[in-house]
Length: 125
Image 1 (tube, rainbow, N blue to C red):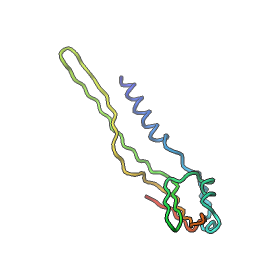
Image 2 (cartoon, rainbow, N blue to C red):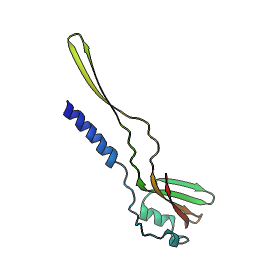
Image 3 (cartoon, rainbow, N blue to C red):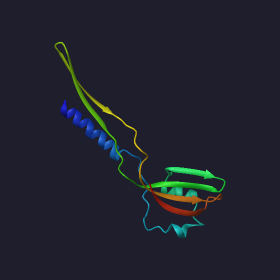
Image 4 (cartoon, rainbow, N blue to C red):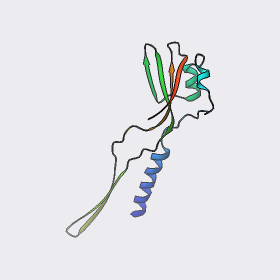
């Protein structure tokens, strides 16, 4: 029984750690300032994949891509037992909890109405 519980806990930890969506592989040597005015939203989608967050307004579109996500894990585990007459019961439970939004580093790109890059920044949450 203990081996089964340990296996369940390790499996859950593996899924939490490695089961998240993949992040884009962004070359750290890219000079985003040189791309202003000639890099398009469509090029960003092709190069970086779909953004994690998109916001649109009358002035254009903003998008954020996850560069690095800080570890953010919450896990609950409980064991209980009880008796009733000559019968004995044991139980194991795994619970979930509400966690804050993921912290990390994001690439924030601003595009004008024509879809051309007009600004960029790296954001840490």
